[in-house]
View 1: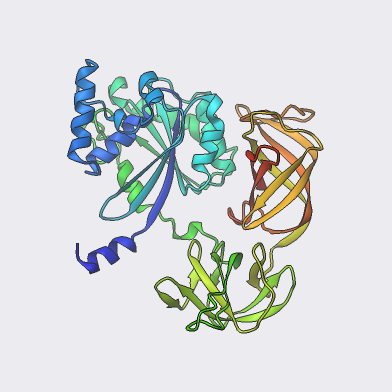
View 2: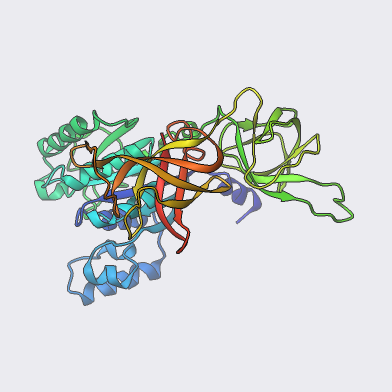
Length: 424
């Protein structure tokens, strides 16, 4: 591979997307079909699953075996954990989070979808919208995933009829009108036969829209990142103290929002001191601007006492600063949430302790009703709570910035992550 080609490949867009659907809706087959039809698997992988399919007496090649990697998954024929798959086409690179469909694995879906720019919600053309479809659509909306694609799968089992597709689309549009979804598309597919996955189907000439792969390759994701509010949580202070870099002092981290350029006037939180950006360094040398999600080192004109957990922002655009915070949480812990309980809280590069002040309500995902007096928040439950932290956080609402608006709660005794939270 030539250097020019390599550079072009590295500069390609990366789309992270998650897949979710009920059990046996065909998620693993759909991903297998995408990998196979886009020529993203090796010949020996294909031969292995071909032999396995023959040994099990299955008709044709079971493409689901490409993704069901765990022994327990293969034995049961289901997905039980989040599996990440990587593939690329000439237009874009992709990371897929394949998440389970079972109700008891809601937390796995939240984990897989939390960094996604797009969610594929799979539904069986024969069954239409089911309880899990509502759950998946709600979680995608809760996590503010900007783009949602509803794949109506197994169209071959309803004779590729347009009415079956239209009926399901109406069900989803009715439910999604109650949610804060930004962009929703519908594609009729047959993962098993390959219709409308990578290649356009000749059996559904009534469908004039794009194939699933065309949507994934062309969905606009550049505006999904917050380019307005400049946020740079400091992760590490770089002091090489070598002869060559004797006076070098840089602040390394990942840009969480906005665009930073040399010459910009910035403020450091919590101290409130101001300075000007002297230079922005990367592994490949200095750059003229940095934006989310780039990892860079920022150097300032003035020597200011800055450490991990501090945040560099623009002087005229600062985040909220506070200790009393409202969260929507998905509870991940095996033990229930303890009212007035104390937990460790991780927010960007900051680590503090907090106490749960109030449980406002638990959400019934199926009908979106709020259970006001519920205090029994257990695994997979979604609830709204209030916390107080031991020291102020610099944050935005999750709706405004998914990085500075999210937190993780950790049980201090076991170091177990017990909740993913979105700041309201």
